[in-house]
Length: 117
Image 1: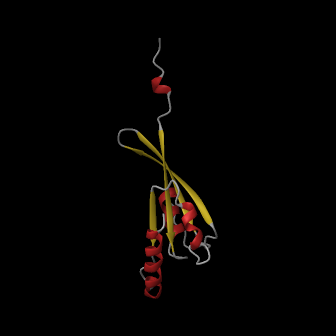
Image 2: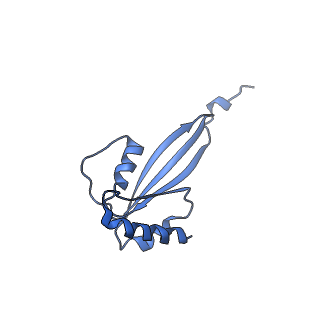
Image 3: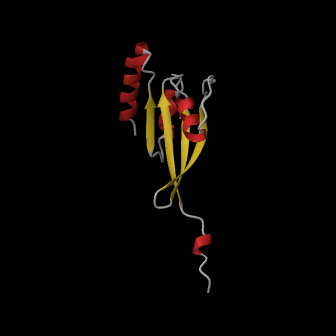
């Protein structure tokens, strides 16, 4: 009998990462750079959300399919962020460090985020 185990596809783990933060802080730039190794000089603001996928192979032949969810940061969308937390392994909260005016607002928003389930 022949061993066909080498023909089997390796198990692929799923990982969901969501990018949150104020509008126009670079979430889409980071998502594209990470998933497609691409950087554009101009972007349109994300309305709602965009999805990206990155497949990674770690040492030990561990395959990971990473879903990157780029969620819009406009104030009217923020109350809905919590709807995306389910089955999320990581949240990256982004802040534009050059915009001191919005820093306090972002700190308050992050504190609210950390208090939600």
